[in-house]
Length: 401
Image (cartoon, rainbow, N blue to C red; front, side):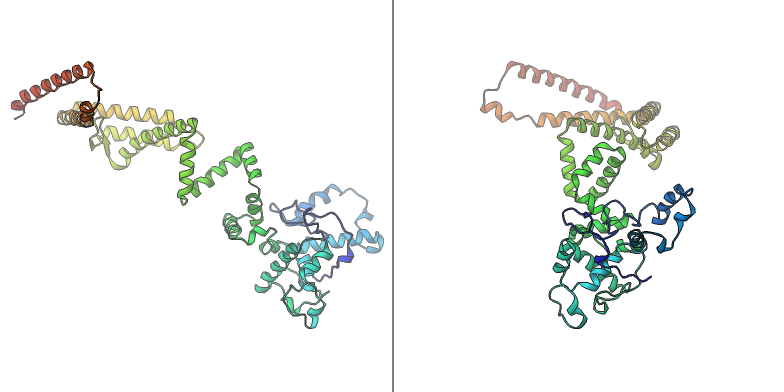
């Protein structure tokens, strides 16, 4: 296809980017609402236009005439401009820049002497030089890929065959942020997710809009939650910030504690199934009896079948209590295991008591006036209890031997 669109062929119209004021027929920016023939995500422009054609299927036959002589010249010109953009998208306007612009610093020799600077071209177009250069850079990258001719072989008014419209967005960056390190990272992530980089850049440049969407839409909030969790895996600083925010919010802190309890109970059941071991109430780890393991497998299969939207707390509690009850019964029914369980529980209590007593700061009793009669009475009662415990253990010692 060969085209030769000149700025003089069109009548100025309000810009699609108000802050820059640049407009040419059909030159809708990728981030703006799709213009006539602009590439769309959910279907080709021709498919989108099909609904309009169907709606007018009952019109008179003469309205379908393709003979330019049968229609107003202004309408014919608009239709042709529409067709050019439908087939080529932004390439039609990138060509205008490529064949007419000579950025500053390049020698004005030969055909290039007829070209103008990006600033001069922008002044004539009524837009910013930055925007002109975005089209220039898009053409430059496409030329490096062999998709379009290099600037040097293009003269003002040159006519060439242009690539398809759907290729344009692969080269054109509608935002200045796309060239920054941050913008490049966002663009790369967008491409990895299979979406247009321009859409991701637009969201990144408008965090207030993102916040509004998250607050208003559960689907957006869920997508944001998943993205944050994925990012936190590789971002320790974000992990710390999120943990701090949760710790400072009472409702969130309670929710985390509740979910942690559920996770611990599910983990208790899962360990029995996967490792074949169980932790007794006193804390010793032993081989899980067959009955306990079968019950754990039954409950775990029910837990694994729950949807993400279902609350697992009640199911986890039931599984934990059921399995733990079987473990306690198994311990009581096994004489050797029962003795070891009680011995483990006694040692655990003794260690706790010893640690608490060792933490008493007796030096302060001597240095400061903190003495009270009740302290002495409690210690004397503790001394008697310890004496009784020692006597009972000594009495049991011969029997044990």
